[in-house]
Length: 331
Image 1: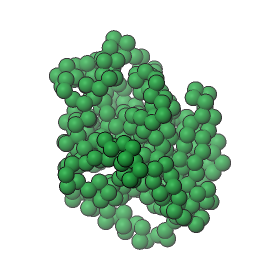
Image 2: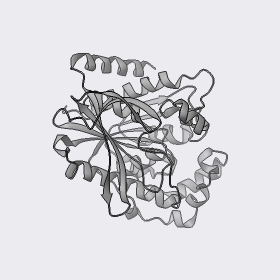
Image 3: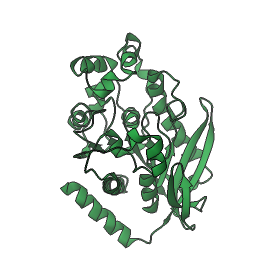
């Protein structure tokens, strides 16, 4: 908790020392030979007028299609959990934009709220490749690409998005580890879900190392309740040299803290922060629910008694901004 409070103090000091920017926002898709088109939300600092606008199921104060403010802006790419969508972490993306970052979030083709028809192994293999294609687009084809500092790229991944980022920064999955882990922890959420049988199959174990795409452009990463972390080869994790922040909860019944967050803390050489959020469940790391979302997807909106998701999200997002400020700087 002390490290979280320190991060918030640093964040508030930075905001007080710089003129505030509005959060500009663009919603677009770009053509992709593998997937037809990829849906993106892009938040960025802007001098445009911010107004209340509906985004997905929530309202945000943003400058829709406002001009980009600033040059050499660091970029953070977001990867959502299974069956998620680009705006799942819109509050964090907006806060990053107001602090001087470009934040981009994609809806992963084949693993989103509209479409989960692909085989789970194929979904996991394709996700890191999709991240690289989005970064290619933002740095070479996006009309505002001249504002991007391609040497300062961060990554934020939740759940399956955490798995995605671990591959992207150099981790190598070994599905024999999935089989052995779930043999010992058969009641764990990720070991009982429908995809577990596929991920413990001979076909998964035979996945070639060349199937997993890494991206050296990513210089810092935040992993929030990262799924399947225990299935990464320890030697590959020891070679990962980017700074990492880890968030999770010992109360998470879907992704265990011990088998994923603690495992990564022991294996990754440059873990700068590790947080065990007391009282949080797996969905608690998503943004606070609107009334409309609560009616439609109550399982994503229920927290343990006494846990204030809205207040926690402010703490989490402030800490994330501070982490990327420290680790995507010129120092």
